[in-house]
Image (cartoon, rainbow, N blue to C red; front, side):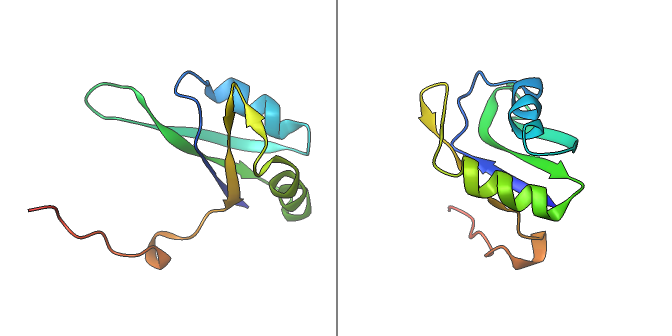
Length: 90
C-alpha cells in the first residue's frame, strides 16, 4: 500500500521516516518530495508498505502524531487520476 505522509518537518530524512514506519511492518520504499530547484523538502512524502493490514495499522497509529515538533498527516495515497485538477495561477 502506498501511504501519503504530510506536514513533515523540512529536516526529516527518508531514513528517519522508514524507521518510524518499520515499527509496523516491512517498508519497501520511502520518497520525500523535494523542490527540483532548491532540493528543499516540500513537507510531504510517500511510504510504500508490502502488507496492507500493517499499513492500515501504521496509518491509524501515526495520523496526527508528532514528529520533530509537527503533527503529521498520514493516510492512504490516492492514485494520480483521483486527485482534483489544479488550476494555473494567472
